Image (cartoon, rainbow, N blue to C red):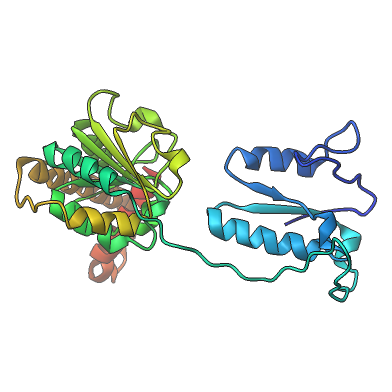
Length: 306
């Protein structure tokens, strides 16, 4: 939450324009954040004596429902004012601090079309974003079913277990060689809960048929020429696909993905060993007992920082 001095000019329009000719620092910050999906929340006249309370409740509901930050800008003086009693005057709206969510299920015809695309693919890659939160196990079960390599966006990295033999690590400028090999070598791409902007690391357009799962239909095909969109929760959509897709077992592509993952882990381990020698860690008496554990941890850090 950003606060303004009580002598600052008030907002006069819903787009955040300042009442004066000079923009406030807060306006510049919000403009930048808006490009990342941040929503600015305003108090309404109908909020009565306590517009802050109504705005706060709307902000929390908006942030929870959309998964994006919400910003409230208010004068410093407002923070020290006592909370007024709830009223029932004409035009006064009394809200409640309550929020809930539902379950979004893809359409049957879209599921059938997605299955056709995935079944026809021989080299499948999954790009997992932060939208797989809560469906971590389901993503890996789907990868096992399809023999697919799993690359992640930076925001999706915390939700994929990178000890899995099909987990290729992060894509992009801070990514791994395994993720690059998986995405550049696939003929079918399944994007789950990701809107990653680094499109130069996606498969070249025309190389891969694509399916995308997202709770926001406006995001589907936003970064790649997607053939089939599944508007739904990632866990629900994955479960629906799993019931329709046949297991593949061992395939040449799965073996290639596992080779790429092993190769990247070897590279990360070698880098860790070199850096350990440079810092003299090998001379420590207890380094041998804990060395492998430290190197495994370092390899995970290397995944994040390239």
